[in-house]
Amino acid sequence: MSEGTRILGIETSCDETAAAVVENGRRILSSVVASQVKLHAPYGGVFPEVASRAHVETIYRVVESALSQAHVGLESIDAIAVTRGPGLPGSLVVGLNMAKGLALASGLPMLGINHLEAHLYSIWLVQDEPEPAFPLLGLIVSGGHTELVLMQDHLTYQRLGGTLDDAAGEAFDKVARLLGLAYPGGPAIQQAAEGGDPQAYKFPRAWLEGTWDFSFSGLKTAVLREVRAQQPDLQAGVDAPRPGLPIADLAASFQAAVVDVLVGKTLAAAQAHDAQLVLVAGGVSANRALREAFQARAKIPVRVPPMALCTDNAAMVAAVGHWRFLAGQRDALDIDVLPTWPLEG
Image (cartoon, rainbow, N blue to C red; front, side):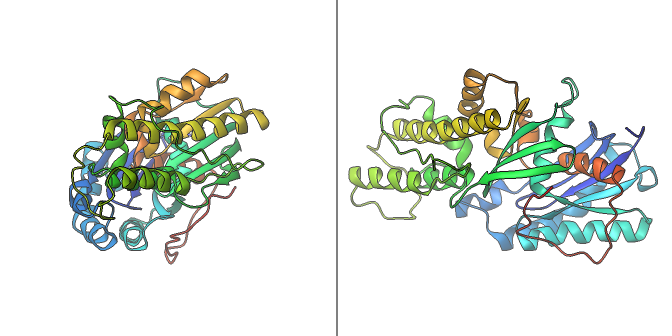
């Protein structure tokens, strides 16, 4: 590994404006994240136009702060890594244009990074643990993505399966809204479920036998039907308290169904592909029930990043940038964003 490689990472794929400086792909010198959660909470989800405008207003000072906190200037940076996709087009453009401007002004190389790949590399930033061993099986549960990826070596991926409809994170947000809980749905469901019975309702599990794919649309619909059965006058899309509804039991039962499928399919895929390690990354990986289920059921090591590295951040983008820089990647300044960019090896 090259000594002293410093990468400036920029991330604006959704509703976090982030910048970070990472050394040697592992050591975080700075990581700054400006969240937009309060801006989007009234909508019950991310409002794309609001997100892109907030990125424009915030990106300069976030990057400036990341460099300042790392005590470096651009003259001490080796490359600029920026999320190119997947994500919201308007949000991605802001980060990519910032990176282009910095690269043009400084002469530094620019590297377009896949957001899903970056989530996998978040675990390399945990310095008090050894580097992950290959082959590993990665479960990416981030926003609109639920993906199972086999990683044989650095920058080498085989997508085994993914969501066919609602991703796990989307299902959490939609069910939280249905139950009258706050946005974002993941933390709200987890908190509501703490006092509930996970076996109170027998919600369906879509195992999709013979594939490594996922589907949570039917589960979401099952929760909707149960809520409407108990409150026939419920108006769809209305966010309000649900007096008389057993929120805790519904939340716990829904969460248990999601966790059961994620853990079951991931561990089965890891066994089928002789993985030495399971890596769980993305916003939903912060869920306590998911973490506990993996630790209880796995026969091989399971690594989950600390909370600060589960949600979108630029340190993970810079971590990937380190490896892509060493591999010789250099992107032209006329590249465009790729909102639906699949993770390919």
